[in-house]
Length: 283
Image: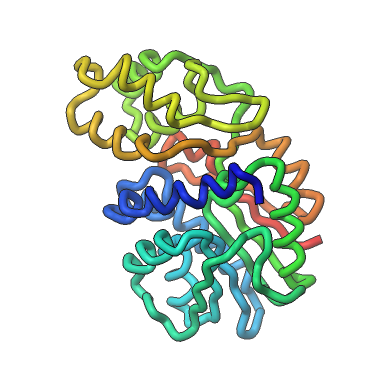
């Protein structure tokens, strides 16, 4: 496991409280938009169609995805890399402590599962929390544990190389004048700020750099309202680095191990254009 991925595991432990306080206020999460969760349900039904007692793996502790499986009384293994995150997210579930769920704190790159044992694996923002140099290792491991007719669904943030980069104040101006949702403001700042927060050499967005820019140029200057500032601070604070790559580059790795059946995006928010669903079948 790379140093980057180890740091991400620790980071999520620190962020677990903020992410569990109000799920519908968590930017981009499955509960933040009806269209987002509708697509999860759609692909889930396709993946388990005509399967008797399917075995499901959820990467991460996302409560909405685990409830989606357990609400149908289907056996589930949930693997998160941080015990604190798993505990906080479990507390938000409708079907917490379900007898058919096995919760494991482990390594996504070395899953405690035999070969060809899982019918369907899904996860939200998984590759964004793994160093790009480990993406192939991740996909190989997921291919290993899937049955020959197994399916995979990952929803990950991708970079649009043609998307314009703008300074922070221009992005905020568009947010105010074009009726953006605050989630869209976050993602535009997160991915497409021209202020040096993204380094293409290592495919990493550095949120600490963005936080410094916001502190210097935005906060306390009546550019945003007080509540807007507090919301933005809440979600920028604590995030350090995130892996984000152009879709074409990501797919080059993914398609070595899975046949892509569908690529879809919800329409709840502007940011959904680059936070897509990738549904595939084991090669």
